[in-house]
Length: 214
Image (tube, rainbow, N blue to C red):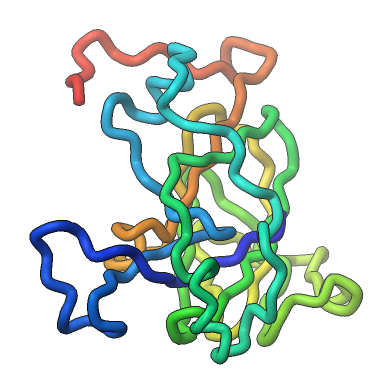
């Protein structure tokens, strides 16, 4: 997967003043691959997955940026279609025990800043980090496949990128988000749903009978 991470804009909510935020009249938004993530309100992702309830999420999170652009060029902040990302509960569904590799590419749409990206449910290997736009022809040669760091949070540097890899061997619904609360709360996040494995030990157990309802 090649996933852009960065900030964008949103229409100012009703009854909220956005006059003190640049640009005037707009609210900040976060997005990954031009999708601003929205948590479901009627049922949790985990319950929707376990009970096979439709209409809670979609499995169409793009594996690559829908629009290719110069990700680290600060002059692209005038591109309105890129700035105003659609809001969706769009996730990635993966088979149990599959290997997931993600190139996390920072963007400069609303300024460039570091994004500490945290993945729930897994530790991952950090294969490489760098500055500029990730180049698969040259940057894959920088992968540390001998003794890569194992983390659950990785810094995607200012105007740069990071590559992580993990084995999806933990069934369930797992959140991935920027660890800055102000970014996470406005959509700089996504989620994975890992399918059940072939054995009872690798199958998601049912919720406890006293699980509180949303």
